[in-house]
Image (cartoon, one colour):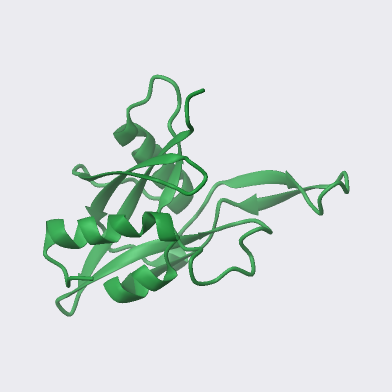
Length: 157
């Protein structure tokens, strides 16, 4: 059985000479009351016939509501706790989190209620310093921050 694969983008910017990273909090009831350890990159499934970079661009468009710049910096892949492989890319992008416009998804909620509700794929986006991002990010995705800092010359985590 093939493991699920996803691709995503980790936007970054420079603010007063310091590296900042944009992370997102997934939408829906499961993530609503979660804080540290729940933030992650904007990502989603790689569809059949799609390269990881094309999937990352599509997912960023769907979850952030903005087109990605021409150049994406490969950060390699990580494996999340449940086994999903995530291929990640980074790009310099100064996005106002208040302008994030995410796709919606439907979910039966409350469970077994028979009622379908719509939720945004991304509930919120926020800029973090490298050290803050390491505290807030999903543990299995934290190596992506280290790789980004090494590639662009940000503060060492």
